[in-house]
Image 1 (spheres, rainbow, N blue to C red):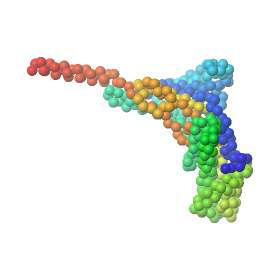
Image 2: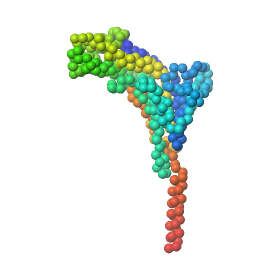
Image 3: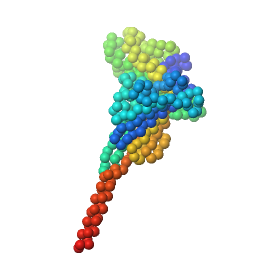
Image 4: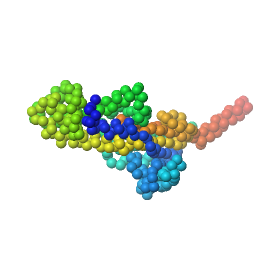
Length: 336
């Protein structure tokens, strides 16, 4: 494990995961109509000045109907609600697509319907995209609800250590993959990519032993010098690691900001829900999901529900056709 004073990358993240408690719930409710239009309602707790440092992109523009009520559980706080009607999901997705930064709450909604004479089938999907910033590296393992809540029994402690070690590995991978690109970019280092790959484990050990500086990038490059022994120090190329270091720092800041949020997403479908991956309420046309921010740290989190609605007119026409056919058969039988 890294020295306690050297976990510069991980310290803030670990403390947030271990000590942070989910204290604010963002409620997102979507009510669909048969034609695909819908109303979206988002509510979140806040103080007299607003929702404050909420990470979820709470709407504030005039196209949403905004309201404020006193929180029944705490009279000193308020519940802020924003509502808006949309003709289709494309309109909402345009609002959700705010910038290209992956380290944020980024979601997308799909809604499809299929006409099948007696029934029309509807499918809703909403995906919260992962905010782990290094897409070329395997994402870190997701902590369990108990682990992120800070319950540290003897049995859980081992699992937490495993997850932390895995996260440490993946963040190392981000630097290591960048190292391979730097080696290809600068032939004056006189190091082949295959040599660096063969010494990966040694480099990981050197990094683990030598992280005793607050300058994480410098510590990593010094470890590379010790293991790979280039004629020119890797420290001369630290600018090539600026993007990786910036992403890691942004990731840590984002983790600290979002760890106090959890989510409840509810959808009201046209017709009766017949299949869903909802983990909470499933009742007639309603389905709901409850999850915390760590659920979509490592991988995309997709919610879906399918429903069916009886098509009254085609059903009546079919019934009339069958009745007419039976009547004609009966009259023909009588004549015979």
